[in-house]
Length: 242
Image 1 (cartoon, rainbow, N blue to C red):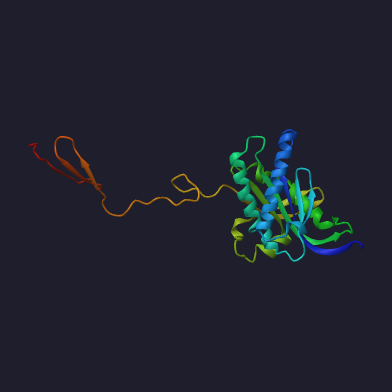
Image 2: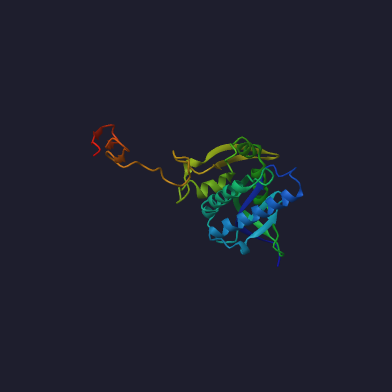
């Protein structure tokens, strides 16, 4: 089998500030990221075993198999990964907290006889992932932001502009990207913490008091029975002790 050309979607994920944590922490976060990414891919109905997985040292690159819907790599995949990162960070210490940059692109790659993947789309993907504008987007974000997604112009045009289910075009903003010889633009979206309601809890609706007055019945110890209504009116009946 010789090298052949084929259209593929490619994604890359990189852990922010992974250096300097020490080998035990680095091995822990690398393993955790791989597990979370695999689970997110599978939840997106993409066969993990059919993907080409390349270790990038501080992250991973995934070449999707043929026939994968590119939109699925955004939703639910990115949202699934963000949810898992939030859950992980709730229990993680300062050396095992994970925040990531993720980039998506697609194009004609070269597939080798031993499963190798090469070509211009991978270069574009790498430049997007490491672009200063993308790095700054995550670095300047509050700690609750667990991930930043960067889409190439091509990927954005074919997946986001159409407004597919689960994908909101207004969630993305366009930025200029300059990285080495690569000059283009990217579309960014951040994944922060889930919305929190006024009770301070996540995912649970606020409790609304029942409409109308609420009657309370409190018994006094020596001077009778007191009836109070929540709107402020009190009716006090006194009785004499026998």
